[in-house]
Length: 208
Image 1: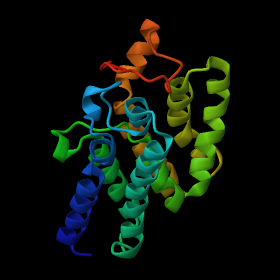
Image 2: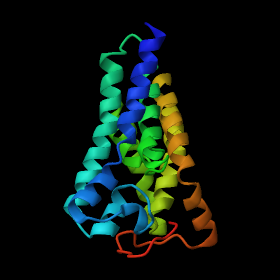
Image 3: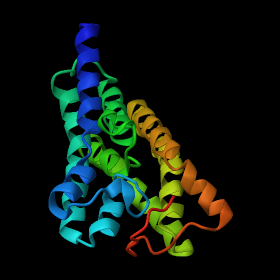
């Protein structure tokens, strides 16, 4: 397969991921700048903080998931001859979401976009992530504890469950990208400042 064509598709996935859904939705329907509210994060949870609207948060969630799903669909259709294409296109779309070129390389944390990719690529990997997530969350009552635990262990679980090597690599690559955007969360956990009530609306900008 033509390497130039592969690069074009990967760049296209990055640009698709870069579409700042949360910023556009909040600007359009709430006339607010999400980067100046709540955590300043361009993602679903902060949409709820900024707007107090579950429908808008759901719209952003589904839109961000659609970006991830689209990246895998592109890989399976136009790059079907390249076995590692889903890994490359998903990495590109999640990086685009996390470091949007349209938002001066600001963005979300990649969970919804990665979940959308997993639904198309391997629903079992997504289910495994959710199963791993639930226990640490219930024990700690802190969402990010479950998120970090599941993200770290998902590639391990894929290997233990004897999934194909491509799925293990897929899970590992996406986990690393998502974890990079959670470094600040790890620091807050260490300091004991990570909030439990993510749904609590905040009118001022925070660092969470």
